[in-house]
Length: 250
Image (cartoon, rainbow, N blue to C red; front, top):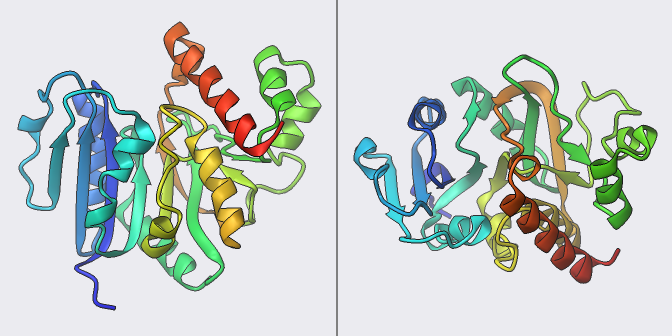
C-alpha cells in the first residue's frame, strides 16, 4: 500500500491557550517525517484559526462542541498514513522520540498503539498505565479509600522503567498503526468526554491486539485534571463512567 504521509495526527481544540497549543504543534511539525496535522476545533468561535497557516496543517471548525472522540473521528476518512497520533493540546516532546516510538511499534505486529513515559512539567511521573476501570476503582480514586488498591491499579507494584503491555493507557499521546485505528472505527462517539480512551483499550483487546507502554522515551504533559476542578466536567465524567460500565460491565 502506498501512503501519502508517514504520520498524521489529530488535536481536538476547545478554547485552548494559544502559547501552550503552539508548543505542542511545533513539537509535532519538527518531527522529521512526511506529516499532516488535523486541528479539529470544538470551540464556540474560530478565533484560533488565524494562528495556523502551515502547509502541513488542516484546520476544521465545527461551530459547536461535538465531543472529544467524535471530533477525532472526523479525520478518519482522510488518514492516508502509516501511523496516526492522537495528541492532546498540552504536550511537549523532542522530535526524535516519534522516530524511536515508530521503530518499536513497527517491530511488534501485535501492538495497535504505543505510548511513551509521561511526566509533569516538574518532572514527576504521571501514572498513565492502569488496569481496566471498575466501578470500585473509580469510587476508590475519588474517596481515597485504599491507597494500596490505587497503586496496584496503576501498576506501581512493578518496575515502570521497563516496557510492558498495560490493560489501559490514558490517551494523551496514543501513537497508532493507522490501519488498526481504522479497524477500531476510532472512538465510540457515545462518550462525549472522558472514558473514551478506556473504551478504546477494551476494543483493542477484542481486536486481539495490545497496547505498549515504552518508557525509554518521555514527553511532558501539563494535565489539567479538569473534572476535579469543574462541576460540569465532573458530571461529564460520571455520565461517561455510567455508559462505560453499562457497555463493559461493573
